[in-house]
Image (cartoon, helix red, strand yellow):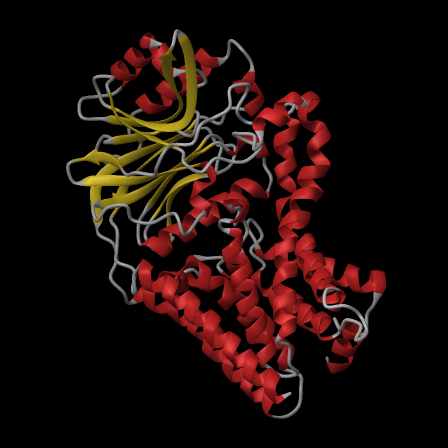
Length: 528
């Protein structure tokens, strides 16, 4: 193994770039739907050895000295994000005549941009590089900072954070209940990279083995304890029905098909309960933009919903919400990607708007200029969406409120927090039909599981064509509708549970990791 590490360390030119890209691409196999997490124990040691050899020219300038480290991390990130996000381009094929030209930007351009964060991480790590085990802690801290930046820079896009790779199942998700999403990125890199030090001589090998047992053993131990010995969530009592209409995205865009889609939603909502042990559903959930027209413009559609709902039932529907303002004789229409709560009389009792819109999907940054050049948002038709002013809870009943999460809002662990002490669940409505039967919908569902573990709240997830389901507060799937299944599933809503340390301490643990591991790097660098 030492001979292999030396060969990798000495790689140069295109061979070094190819090795880094390959390591990153293989790491994506740890993501859903594959969950081959053990691949990280191979790919991160390769990254360590590549960084061992990423030495800039001594006679070069301050910038050029950092370029070998930057490109090593950038190529690793490029491989990881191309392999993990190529499916984004599928959304451009729905209206191929208009958007097919942008496929190279989605497949290569987005990964190239995201890879910059990993390039920055390896530059930071290489600045404190040493010959021993300390360099692994430095790399973990640097990647932790890079992933934290990914949550908010350029509006944020933390899809497929490295923490996801080491959490393939509920057993391996429970650590995030203790330390949170950000610190899990640090833990993942430490666990995966430590095997790089297993094959050296002397005390470094012993320290590496001990650290691996502490971190990876603690990671597994947290899962065993929390799943088998900690308090279980008690049933909340409400019966929910998740409706998955499985409508092809191209069909939703065709004029004249709206009423057929709407009729399917009503029929699935009215089906009798298949499980005799369950009462009639109290809440019925429809996916994001499930109603293929502006609901408030169609009083007969609202009346049909009222006729479908039984006494005491409520519908939570993902819709496009319209606001009309008149000023100085001019009419302005604003459109929101929203979630409406409709009671059995057809009255909209509450609404929540999406606050974190998808750039180029739901709105155009620098829209005035880009529209002049013929650009438009992919998923917003010709109208574009307006972001909601603030995220707020959705009151369902006197004792139950929900955190509404529309589409990819569920991936932002920092934003998914209790808005009020009475929040009892999260509701994620989404339309992943844009991406077809690719890894995208499965990755989205997996990240919903992680949010439940981190917050201690159950997740109700309704997706247009999958994956829909009910997830309990420990990330376990109670009921599920797979990709491409048309139907409805009923289940009793599980209750919430307290996270061991709370959200505030989770963030403090993350920064404690960064400070401690950076200090270890500084000390080791001074001794080298």
